[in-house]
Image (tube, rainbow, N blue to C red; front, side, top):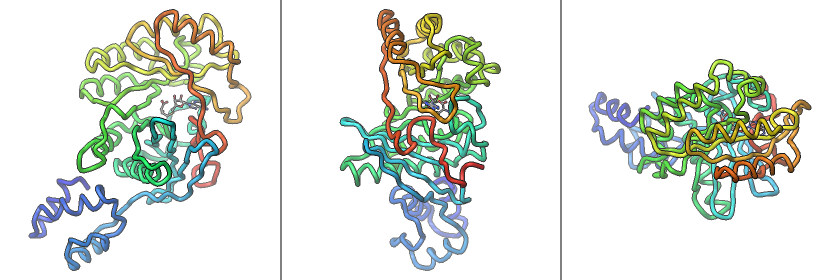
Length: 341
Ligand code: SAH
């Protein structure tokens, strides 16, 4: 329930709306897992809450630590489904990588989550709770609060747009975590209609697009939904996004052997990058047990870097993190039975 709904509930019971605010703060400010914890609320009221409501907080079922410090959480939801979230520490920041759906309805051929059926969208509180759990781990293990959030876990955030937005509202509100939206990045495989909608709503977080190819034929072969949302539409929505928000876009891009490793592929990316101010993250591929996809050799990545830089396009080469615990990007498909439905 939202804060307003809680307030209305208490008013309807002849109590003060302030009681709703108190319960809300216990739930989201202090992360209370039981009504018993809400010590500034009378015993009778706590009993009444217990009789009528349940608290569906997530539960970190399993935590794994990588040799590089990365932490992966298997998160159990109230209906026993599982998603995963990751804490990625670096010298300067600690980043939470969170899930937005159980499974995914898109079918990117190189992604482990795509192999799971989409079971359901996560609720705003389930997304928020992943962030809180990682913030606690960051304080505990690295002695500092979480600094950044990326929606790069399981699922397509723009296919669960309303709930993702509500979660971000809670994360950024002073009653929640009070984080700056500039430290939040929503990553999408590129749903033009939703990118335009976000632009219209003048959201303040950052946008990353999983591009992987700037040639329609190639992109459709690895991300089949590109047939429905071709690059022309994606480009148009990104131009609109930039016009409305003035916020630079990040393109995520993996270079695969024999798929997008020719000079033609590089030139197409350079051309695409000229439409809207952007930067390119060349990310390392994490094999998911499919021989079709293999990371291209370093020379090919270097060719991309050289050409992008020659054209004054910022580009970074991202090393993978948490590989030894399957926490690396695209691998958040727990091998246990719970999620391989
Ligand atoms: N659905 C969203 C967010 C989740 S995927 C999206 O597509 O952006 C997060 C990032 O990991 C995306 O850029 C995706 O293309 C990338 N990815 C997926 N599988 C991968 C793999 N096996 N190796 C490397 N990156 C992968």
